[in-house]
Length: 354
Ligand SMILES: NC(=O)c1ccc[n+]([C@@H]2O[C@H](COP(=O)([O-])OP(=O)(O)OC[C@H]3O[C@@H](n4cnc5c(N)ncnc54)[C@H](OP(=O)(O)O)[C@@H]3O)[C@@H](O)[C@H]2O)c1
Image (cartoon, rainbow, N blue to C red):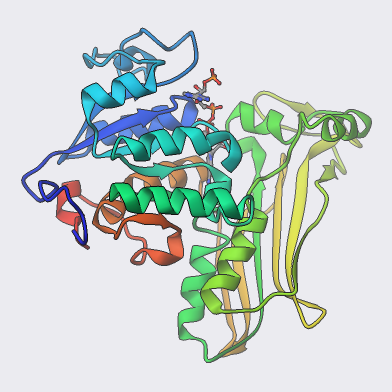
């Protein structure tokens, strides 16, 4: 551990984790943590009245009581339980979670968060990002936003592939998902089953916000490569209209109705897009894939098919990042600042200082 006051965090110390946010993702992370060695869940925080006051085991459907009561009083819980690290999974927007993160940091707790905008928070709010960085350094802790996307597939992975390039002319990253294979709330979040009119209305009143994080991924790639972008352009959220009837277990989409959505973002340099990100999630996608195309010396074409499962991937990268965050220098970090991502097999403590 570098520049940390808490020298007790070593191979003998069981890593104490607080869960902050027990939605679908927080609960899945909790279940994976229960299977891991060298780590112990010591606290659980959630604002939902249906969860607060209940035993964590019941909330995450672990079929056994865990002796941890879910609390809606974060400050009191953190003071009493003194976790080393919090797994934070409450919301997508940096400004909405800033106070939650600041509270964790003030309690001397490291943070690994699924908040999309925290993956590269200088895009959403430069001043708040500097404030959080300063606070984390003052308290000797590290804060990281990560996940499958943003956090890995459309930023960390292409950045890593450029490690063997002498010159880069352009980078294009695509993620295409068949939403029928994803959770029902995700299918609803992308407007599957709506008419085009209903979809457009839900976009206008922000019931459908689309995928959060493309701008952050472009910015992270540009920063890692030292590209001095003129601008980052984010395209509008567009409907993907079904060309024939398609369905998932939960949703039937008629021909001409909305099967899902697509979005794009560009990093522009010298008037041309040097970074292009394309994201598509819809029911009935014939091919699911994650691809990275780098034009340069050498050029690289990489395709993962089918695409990486979003929920499994997010849960994994959050847990795998815990020892890396605990071993990092204090401050607000992004995935490009940490050692290369890797699975933390076996006892999590074995991966400290890695
Ligand atoms: N980067 C990535 O690749 C990635 C991947 C997956 C998910 N995510 C993001 O991770 C977040 C969590 O995902 P999810 O599907 O689990 O979301 P979710 O189902 O909405 O769960 C969030 C949970 O946090 C609770 N919560 C909200 N505000 C809180 C607060 N101030 N204090 C304590 N608890 C609070 C919510 O309670 P209420 O129900 O009372 O609001 C809910 O139980 C989302 O923003 C999602 O977009 C990112």
